[in-house]
Amino acid sequence: MTVVTRFAPSPTGYLHIGGARTALFNWLFARHHGGAYRLRIEDTDRKRSTEDAVEKIFAGLAWMGLEGDGDAVFQSHNVDRHIAVAEQLLAEGKAYHCYCTPEELTEMREAARAEGRTRLYDRRWRDRDPSEAPAGVTPSLRVKMPLEGETVITDLIQGEVRVANDNLDDFIILRPDGTPTYMLAVVIDDHDMGVTHIIRGDDHLNNAFRQYHVFEASGWDVPEFAHMSLIHGSDGAKLSKRHGALGVEAYKDMGILPAAMRNYLMRLGWSHGDDEIISTEQAIEWFELSAVGRAPARFDMEKLTSLNGHYIRESDDGELLELILPLLEGLLGATVGEAARTRLLAGIGGLKERAKDLNELAENALFYCRSVPLPMTDKAAKLLDSDAVDNLAALAKVLEKLASWEIEPLEAAVRAFAEENDLKLGQIAQPLRAALTGSTVSPGIFEVIVALGRDETLVRMGHLSKGPA
Image (cartoon, rainbow, N blue to C red; front, top):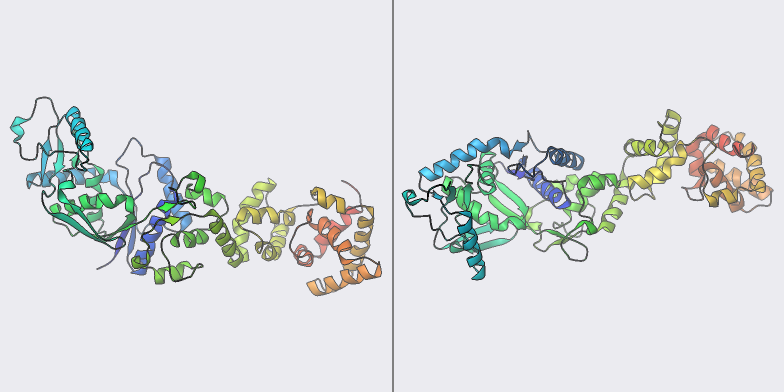
């Protein structure tokens, strides 16, 4: 058997964190078993489904690296197929027309709830002859659920789950206007797509019992079910925007790396021993549904940010440069030239050690892209008094003569200059940092000098002696 999983979002909004984790688990399970991972857009609710939401879902999945195998299936394109299966069930006596009026259905629901019953429909049209139908009522089509016994599902995460069949409604599969319901469409599409494993949130567990019987009534194999617990906030409450329940694109805008997001989401409910840093390749090798816990996972933005910092530090310098260039150009309002790119590539290694996200990395890298006069923080400007400027002008003449522009000879030259002029190292290094970066905070000053290069370093030091621009 070839494993086939699917991610099936409704395009009524953005791709949220819970949906992204569901997609990830389906993707990992399929990849682990050498199978296929399919994408289906469940857009049968035409009033709430939007093209914008579809585009955001595709974009979010692309950013996560979780595009489906093959073309996406749009549920709305399969309506004729859904109707044909419903009519076949009717012809086989497995479904029936219900002529209840909206008022009657409301009365039934209210009575059932008052009595504490979960089955809301009393099956009054299940065995009645359609000739008894009242005039002017267009019927819906309901599927016949079993009347006795119980339905047992061996869920790959939740274990064995049971429900008494008397609690299952004969639910509607075709509305009075002839359109199929979600509960019917999802079963047909899963069958037609060859889905073998349905992995989703446990808010769909009740649906599984109903869908199980549609598979059975249609004479189709029932896929394996796996229902994972939902994600809660760090305080244990239902996840909301205040906890970080945002669209995936928001995390991209926050400067989170896709690899960090995948690592973080896979650890929300799934574990492999005590491992916290798990590469995508390792996850594919290790992933099994037996390691998915039943307890709700807790979303923690601080942990995600910390993990993102790790992935930034481990990233290739050239790849990081390409990721932050659009951010830098947005901050600068100008294109980053080749000379600045060269400085960035040389200096990004020192910058990435301190960054928690790409936005922070871009902001800290700005000084490599600027031209003199550099904008100065207040603290940096205070360091550059007349004595400091004179010292830097004299130091520039020393550095200009160095044969090697490497950290060791540069540091030796600066230290020797300080000793010769009866200065502490900080009295020259701190103004030097201010002159070269416009700030009092940066990577090691000698790393910065090497990354800037001889010409740019001397230009920035020499510019100070010319006075304010």
